[in-house]
Length: 527
Image 1 (cartoon, rainbow, N blue to C red):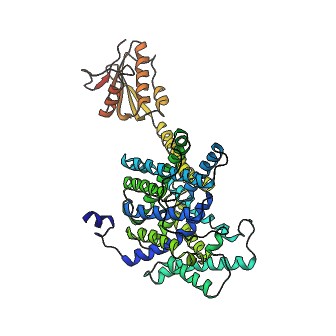
Image 2 (image 1 turned 135 degrees about the vertical axis):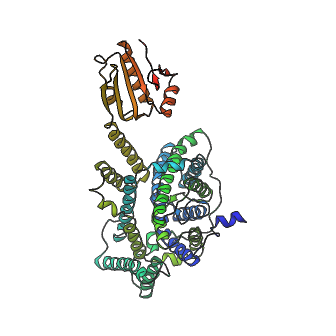
Image 3 (image 1 turned 180 degrees about the horizontal axis):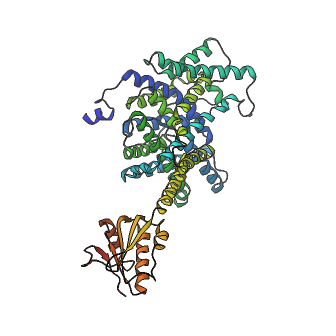
C-alpha cells in the first residue's frame, strides 16, 4: 500500500482540481497531434491515438518526471518512413497491415533497448549536453511547433491559402484563443486558461454556426477517431535473422531519439519547476511504455515537450494530470469522438502558437554578445538543423560533438611551458594546461632536445596527464632525450596520472620510481 501511495504521489500535497483540469486540456491537445503524427507515417489515426494513450498512461505512472506528457511524436514517426521503404524494397507487394506488424515489433525492440539504457544507468549522460545545445534544441522545437500550424491556413492538400473570408475567420479565432490564454491568468488562475480558450472558441463556433475547419476536416475520407480499447496482439511476423537485421537498426534509432527527446524535455521541465527528475527511471518508463504500445496496436513515441509545457504552465506538478490526460483521451476515442471532431482547429492552433512562444528561449537572444562565439554558432546550428531535418536527436548529437571539439580546441591552445636552468645545471620545464590528445603537438614542440643539458625535469604541478595520447606523448619525449644520452624526470604527477602511466606499461615503455634526488615520482630513462 505504501508503494501505491508513492506511485500516485499521494504522500505529497496535490491540487486535484488543477491536475484534473490540466489533464483534460492536454487530452484535447493530444488529439490533433497524435492524428497528424500517425498520418506522417501513413498510419490510421487510431494507431497514433492508441500510442498517445498507452505512452501517456504508462509514463505518467512509472516515469521519473511527474507532470511530463508522453505520446506519439513526429520525430518517431519520421523514423518509420525509412523502415516502410526498406520493407517495401525487401518484400515487394507487402500489404499495409503486414507493415504495421513490423512497426509494432520495432516499437517493442526499441522499448527493450530503452529499458536496458535505464538499467545500465545511461540516463546520466544527458548531463553532458551543453547549455548552448539545450538552447538550440528548445528554440528549434519551438519553431517546429510554430511552423507546423501553418498548413491549417491552406486548403488541404493543395498548398493554396484559404479564401479571404475563411482565412480571416481562422485568423480571428486563433487570435481570440491566444488572447484568452494570455489574458485570463491576469484575472484568475482558478482554471487553466488554455482549457477555457478551447471551450470558449468552440462554443462560439458551434453556437453561431461559424463555418471553419474542425478536427473532423483533418481526417481522410471515411476515417474517424472512434474506436474501442486498444486491442492486445503479438506482432505476426517471422522472427528470423532477416527480420532482425531489418528492424533492429530502426529500433536502435527510435530508442536513441526517444530517450534524447525525453531526457532533454525532462531537463527543461526541471529548470521550469526547480525540481529534479530521475533520468534512469524515465528511461525505464519510456521503454515499458513503448513495449506496451507495441503490444496494444500503437506506434510508440516519447516525451512531448509541447504538451508537457501545456501541463506545467497550467500548474500541474503531479502524476495525476498525466493519468487523467491518458484516460480522458481513451474516453474521447471510445465515447466522445463526435464531440472532439467538432472542435475548431483554430482553437488548437492558437494553443500551439502560445506553446511555441512560451517554449522559445527568448533570453538566448540577449546572450549573443555575452556568449563565446563558438557557443553562439553551436546554438544557431542546432536550431537550424532541428528546423530543417525535424530530427532533434541528430541536431543534439551534432551540437554535442561540435561543443566537444570547440572545448578541446580551446584547451589545446592553453598548453604552455615555463623554462629555466637551476644552479645545478638542471633544466626545468614547468607545464601549464591539460595534456591530452588535442595538446600533444604543442607539448612536443616545447622541448629543445639537442640543446638541453644532461638532466631535464618536466614538472606537472600545474598540468594533468589526461589520456593515452598524453601518455604516448610523454613516452615519445623521454625516448627523444634517451637517444641523446640524457635523463628525464617527471615531477609532481597526480595519483590518477601515475595510475594511467602504470596501466600503460603493457603497451609502452614506462618505468615509474621514486627519485632520491628530487623526492618526487619520476620516469627515468637511461641511455
